[in-house]
Structure formats: C-alpha cells, structure tokens
Image 1: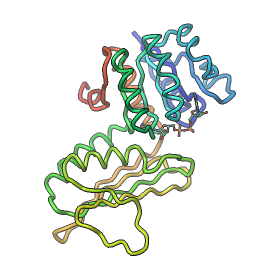
Image 2 (image 1 turned 90 degrees about the vertical axis):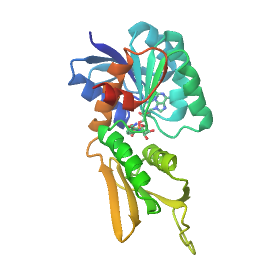
Image 3 (image 1 turned 180 degrees about the vertical axis):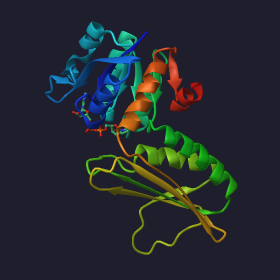
Length: 254
Ligand code: NAD
C-alpha cells in the first residue's frame, strides 16, 4: 500500500524537492500541496492556497502532511491536521518554545515527527558527537554552520540540535560569534553561522586539546538528502499511532 502525502510549502525549495523525490518512489504518492505562493501545481501535483488546506485535507485524504515552511505556517496547519486525523512530519526549523509546545500538544492526538535535519548522515554525526564529547573531557569545543543566503533562522536548527547533543554530555554555555575583547572561557562553546550562495548545509564541531584537533563535520550536497529522509519518515509515521516521534526511530527501524 502506498502512503499518500500532502506537502506544506509545496512551492518552496524543500517542498519542490520533496515532490520531485516522491515522484521517483513507488512507496508513496504526493497527492496535494499547500502554499501561500500563487502556484497551481508542482510536477503535476495540485497546489492549493494554504488558507484552504483544511478543506483540501478532507478532499484528498492524505495519510501524512510533510511540512517545510516557516513556523507560523506549520502552526497554522496543526489544528487542521488534528481535525482530519492526519500525521505530521515537520522539517521546518526556528520554532520558539510556544511553537514547540503547540506541536507537542498536537502529538496527543496525531502522530508527529519533527527533525531539524532529515539527513541520515547527520543522525550518525550526532551519535558520534555524543561519544566524542563524552570521551574527550576538557577539550575546547567550537561549532560552525554554513547555509545559503536566503536562510532566515540562525544558528540553524541542526546547529541547535548539535549544541543540545553536546550539552547532554557536558555543561557548556554557547557564545554566539565573538567580537572585540573576548577571551575564551573554559566552559564555553563558540557558535558561528555563515550565510553564502546556495550552500545546502555544512556543520562542523571542532574538539581541540591535548595537542590534537578532532573535526566532526557533515556537508549536504543536495536538498534531495533531506527530502529522502522526510519521505522515509512519512512512510514510517503512517504506520504509527498518536505521539511524539524522532527521526532516530525511523533509522533504527531499517
Ligand atoms: P523556502 O522559503 O524555499 O520555502 C518555504 C515555502 O513555504 C515557500 O514556498 C513559502 O511560500 C511557503 N509558505 C510560507 N508561508 C506559508 C503558509 N502559511 N502556508 C503554506 N506555505 C507557506 O524555504 P526552504 O529552503 O524550503 O526551507 C523551509 C524550512 O525547512 C526552513 O525552516 C528550513 O530551515 C527547513 N529545512 C529543514 C531541513 C530538514 O532536514 N529538517 C532541510 C532543509 C530545510
């Protein structure tokens, strides 16, 4: 049985890539897209105005909505997903605490899977970071990320996830950029965001100490890597019950 998906933000960079990637797979179909941009279709998939998304969910009856938009757009669709009983895969980044809480509340009634990065390589990097930070006690930690010049949130959602992963292992305080007289404290982690060109996403954690430097890095070479992971998550989520789910579970289910 194929999973039917709707794509929120269908006209955007990720939305289009999700629809293109879905067209190459036989385990799912993109049946409808939503966007505020005046676009009729993407790759033959009808795109309806986001204000009509509730009606379109009833009409097209997807199993899961895959969302790559902006936080307000995701949160604007949550109630419609709950009403329609449709699962939600959230790739959008930049939620504040209230937004995050609203998504968590929705997961009491529908399956919700949110990941700041749907690349399998990043998930492996996070596991490696846990091991490295745990083993290399006292090494200086510095975190860098680079994205395309249209990205609005900084640092990236993935950089924040890396930071949380580090902080699960060690009590470090982030220092965002440095300027002027800024001597390094022992318990800090520098965090830097660069914006340039059409770079898909680069992240690097440097651990330095004991006369050595360890660099753990990841570079996404095409948005298709995120689309593939989000679609794997959608197919998996269609089989899950209500609740909060992590991309890790999808990878471990393989
Ligand atoms: P984009 O600006 O190219 O696309 C966003 C789309 O959302 C646009 O087409 C816009 O018109 C649409 N939109 C805005 N308001 C809307 C609304 N109310 N309803 C429906 N659609 C609406 O951005 P992008 O590069 O595709 O990135 C989108 C999000 O995905 C960002 O938050 C980005 O950080 C995140 N992202 C996550 C991953 C991941 O793996 N989790 C990977 C890449 C990007």
